Image 1: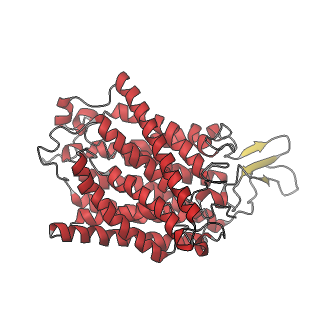
Image 2: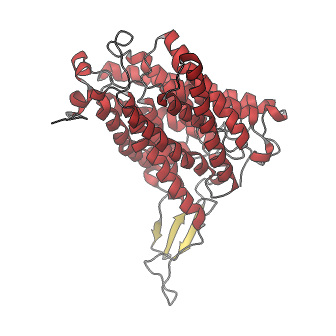
Image 3: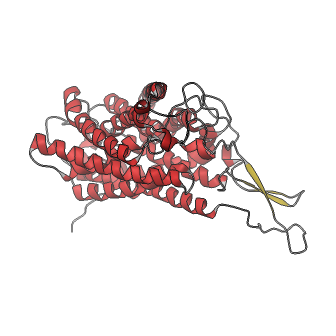
Length: 459
């Protein structure tokens, strides 16, 4: 059942607030037993959500690890891959211990509470006095733990995206502390605003559409990435010596894995195997296709040749742009979003970046910050009642001025918290443990200086 925000991730399944289904476990004679009796789960929804969770995890590694790894110099490939792999472990633990509770607990407008800390109220428990197993479930027939782990995959990849901004120069220890603090103080509040019960961007006057994370994932990570790249400073030799990608083959493979994984990211956000998921799947694919064409065409016109890097970047730009809109626009509008995102992000990663001179190493802001912003705003343009299924939720093409305003408010709010949160966290870390590796370590490369390994050893 979808609330006013219609086809948003939380709107369909987690006005939840911890909806609980009690599953009795009994023996043949009716006595209490220790084995569970299979409840009336929706097996199709469960299968789809488990598959979607695996697809989103694949986006971080191997997807993002290869995509980013191919773009850095060969002396830093393991450093980038280690960041992605380590964050898969680190952020999963943070999510289970307290992150999920802060994002989805309670019913306040701005932050969750501690009701789900240590997964309390999420995992099954045994009531010995009554001889029953209490299995928390969400409203559409999936265990609460499945929804929790699906959302946890978003919590993993979002900070991993930021790593592209300070690639090749940030201390691994500082990166780890930054991501724990950022996930707790920036990601969790924004996730609660947009998806959590009672969130001020989910319900009420300023309800905004963010189906799968344009605001929560891409704007938050992209804007934070820009702040981090400026605060940490440019790589040694940036602008004076060439720093081409060392292996575009890896990048192409990584982009393909991201494209496939994004079906779980977007279509999985329907939290059910239904028509909403189908629309999101098709719109996602066509937006990525539009992004490839737009970025490649821009390169072809301005530089005379389309590149594989441009095609891959365009695909990701289209995927980022459709993320907030996948449950609110039809697939043809998805093509339009992809075309716009491909061209605008091309400008962001070339003209804008060159003009201001910041070293966003792997264009985390250029693709995710700009693409997420464009996608959130265009959601307010192209959202249609035929897709949202809500007579009150529609964009400018159907006269919905208020929805566009709400989208803009959501963008500004998420960007503001991301900027302030990142500035404070990085300033504190810089004053205590330092953010950047030494000049010698940077010249040597992070593979050896931070991890004592080499990506390529030819005997």
